[in-house]
Image (cartoon, rainbow, N blue to C red; front, side, top):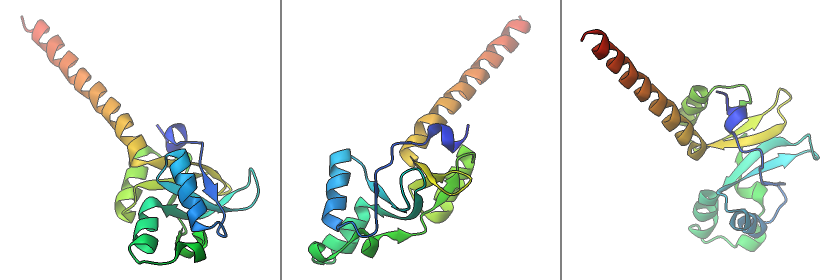
Length: 149
């Protein structure tokens, strides 16, 4: 299975000049923890950054910075961790682990934004695969037991 199959294709985006307060409202309204910062028009969006709810807390609230003076571009992490849509689940996990991130931007062959995949998306897929593996083990053990009777 590849990340293009399991990623969320509905991605909330912002431009670098978007005010931080508007970004926070977008996150709240869409019940998400990250916005992808893009350049380019509809259908050709290039991810250039990412802003998470943690960025808002650490970079703005905890630092006691006046949010009214900040834009998304001021606090975004540049060059977000990204994967091509054909990358596998284990490649995504490895990249999350090595980068210390919970989310990866998913792009097409031209590096245009396609989606976002989060740890929360991977856990159910892995759980289903592990369950299938456990079932295969049980069936194999039953078959062996029946053959030896």
